[in-house]
Amino acid sequence: MEKTEITFESFLLEVDKEYHDFVGKVNQILLDEGHKHKIELKASGYFVSYIHPKTKRSILNFLFRKKGLLIRIYADNCSKYPEFINTIPESMEKEIIKASVCKRLIDPQTCNPKCVTGYDFHIGNNRYQKCRNSSFQFEVNNNSIPILLDFIIHESKERCN
Image 1 (cartoon, rainbow, N blue to C red):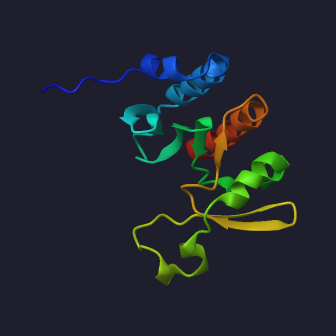
Image 2 (image 1 turned 90 degrees about the vertical axis):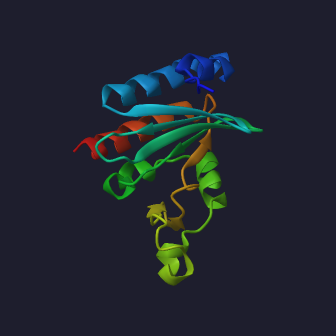
């Protein structure tokens, strides 16, 4: 049986119309920088990964949960733009607080050695050592969109250097 490719347009049909411009803009920014998207259909809905062919690493995912559309940013270079990280609003910082602690940062012996180490960063006076798979996962909404765009641009810029 032939596997049919899931299109970006199919994914976009599932996204709330008020977020189409944001999702389209993110898609175009990343495609212009050479990222490829991989779109899968999971139990919770569409899952879109953006991967750079040179590094084979994801920069972000779009995913659906009960809350709606979420974005997970893999901010591997967050230590290079602390001034931006420090501007993350309290509402988004609350999501970071909920994220799992990175076991590899605290005690490398307690985590799978193949696990990619998470992030060690500050927001204000608060230090966070969070898992890369949940640290920067946010709900897409009208309040978060401007911050998310800046975040993606900061991370993408550092990856292209």
